[in-house]
Image (cartoon, helix red, strand yellow):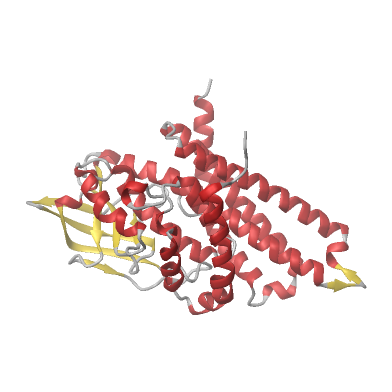
Length: 385
């Protein structure tokens, strides 16, 4: 078994580290303070091919799969979790097309994401349906000749107003339960599509989060994902299994790594009672514990990403995705709390330590809370013989 990252993946990871250090880190606090979407950074990495790292080569991507996306998302989150969220939300919005779309849909949309021309969004959550995504869904799509008329409101949508298209899920058969849900590709200039005000959040300030509103929004039938009604639940499950490895897992590892490095650098320079604070055993044990936890989470995320690239059965994919999300996001929360304690008063000010602290919490919440992920893990364990 070889744990070495080599070849194109190593080149991508090394280049991502360099770009994030040179181009993102100097402006990260400014983006956070201004609540400014990192469009210039996304344009920059689009020119490097990062936008298509998870997209197959036949659609203009690098063909590095979920594992490649995990490596890049980790590197971006190491510097800014908000920017990583904006980046990974593009993958989240693209995955339904990649996993369930028709060949024509893939050719039209995946190629433009891969070359950096398009940004994508994913619209599932509603006020009445968060973790229970299908049970409380109110958004409906009604067939009208060659179009579907969509009405409803989606909530807490990343890249809202910024994306060029959205993967949207709505009920096409209101009496069909979860199997009555279908997916649609909705272009940003579609009549009847609008956006709410930018939401103020605890963290992820540079990630644009808004309501997405559909008022008699006319979508051509060619934009029905997969060309068939009723594919929504399978598409969403397959999409979220992959995205949880990134949103909670890789982002968590990156966030933890960044906070750990900032705290370690500070501890090696800050002096109290005549010696560096890193020289106090209590702090040495803090760093030993979080370094170990980060490495364990990283291995879990990498394994899950690799496993999902092997096209596992859905129940196995769900288990590994849930494990990766819990491991990464829990490591992030533990690390940022310990890092804040190392920084003490200096960390509580407007600082990178404070930003990591604010950004980390949502990793345990979005794309399915960690409590629900543990339910998923337990269900799969009980199936095993």
